Length: 84
Image (tube, rainbow, N blue to C red):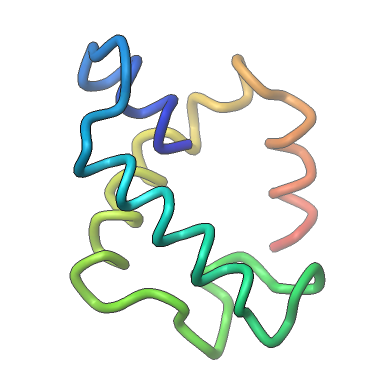
């Protein structure tokens, strides 16, 4: 979703260093999640993986990218909806 946000919202050909670091941070934090594959959607999760500033940035990205994902990644969107 971060890459999608950068490409379509920010009109960047590649993710900037800021967004690449955010994606790496997200991967690292989610890999350490105690729920693993059974993790609920972030907004429904009792344990927040991200630091407050990064969580707010991810929320901004998700709010923009989420509704548009149905057109670009319909299978991933449906999986995400059932994960709520």
